[in-house]
Image 1: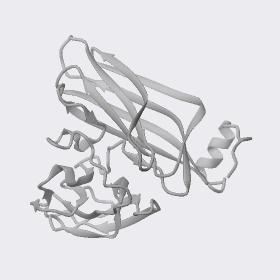
Image 2: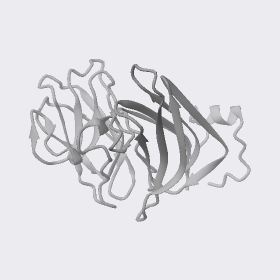
Image 3: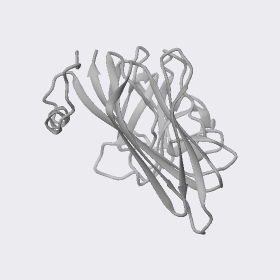
Length: 260
């Protein structure tokens, strides 16, 4: 779909958000990571506080090996909705009921997971893991790098700024927001943040880099007057390196998805 004559007016944005313009939609990704260690740069996803999972593990190109889900609480049986990509990059949304700490096999194995959330009216009592099938202990994968999505108790959905553009679409990057938080104390701390993307079959490239300084918390907001296009199957993965232990970072971005 050609968009060379498009203006990002308020009316246009509202029409896209309301689903009134065929072939266009928005997606907003957000995530956070707490207690980052100074010696270990981490990607922005909640499970990155787990030893060995600081850097997100992507499945190999075109390999749909994400096929299993389980929870840490034996009593959790709520339905979980998982939005991801099949082996060809096609967007797949599926809902499966947890069976406590017992493995559940996904109907469609996935190559990427963009989002997962509790789609029931009852809260989760434990954490939920979506992963490449392997050994588990009480519902928790034994190998941290097998995990591709994590939903913690209380949040009810993934907090990971890991995203892959679905096949058949171009993602126009419209802007980002990020924040740095610290605990008590008056010492100034800092974080170096990198916005990294990877075209299908290529290597990750740093597309943006900035620093946040804080005595308590600080934020950065960037809006692009001309959205930046990224082709189908591009991976987004922000990374953070901090000056001292225990800092937390959040990162969110919005893309306009346009059918090719």
